[in-house]
Amino acid sequence: GNSVTQMEGPVTLSEEAFLTINCTYTATGYPSLFWYVQYPGEGLQLLLKATKADDKGSNKGFEATYRKETTSFHLEKGSVQVSDSAVYFCALSDLQGGSEKLVFGKGTKLTVNP
Amino acid sequence: EPEVTQTPSHQVTQMGQEVILRCVPISNHLYFYWYRQILGQKVEFLVSFYNNEISEKSEIFDDQFSVERPDGSNFTLKIRSTKLEDSAMYFCASREGFADTDTQYFGPGTRLTVL
Image (cartoon, rainbow over all chains, first blue to last red; front, side):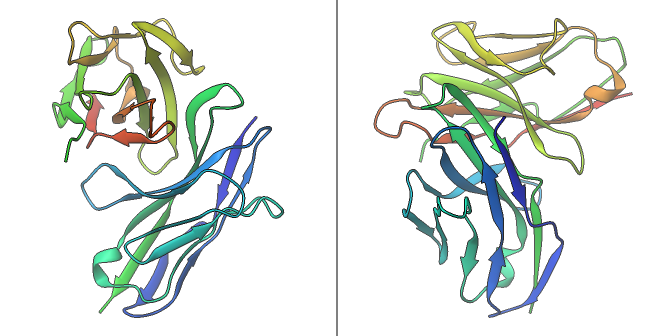
């Protein structure tokens, strides 16, 4: 079945540091890929998405590129802020393959220190 | 901006009791979902619902669980006889199904504690 493997945390960075959170996936079809973010005490918010190979999703300075050849969707940000402290989840859905459900990675907790 | 809402934010119940978790999806969305997240673990899919029917469900979603859309706005998850292992955060999500075909939007969650 479909699965997502995500870099385990926690990750602790200083403000303005570069962030990479690795995500790889296994899917039988051509999934859409997502990053969701969960701020402390809140629900899951869509951060960005990409629906086909070589698409780049971007939002709030975060980027991720859909790499079919390496089955990856790594999240990057050039300069993190304290307000980026949250848990980040990589996920996929495979509507074309007949499944609506989102399959999530385990989540990576990011703490950014001033 | 439209958002998914959930009530209550926290529910405490005794083992064996029935609970109903409520969700109001985004108004023009057609597809509805429940997920759960046991503390420290992955977010897991429970069930999807479209056109007043379950369209997909996971192994977790056994006979103790049911979903309903009793009116035009609410979407509920019922657990008939709660177990200790049902303690988790439960998230509702909805999807438009037209222009934005595949993005699911999540509510803030209901934390269920079974004692």
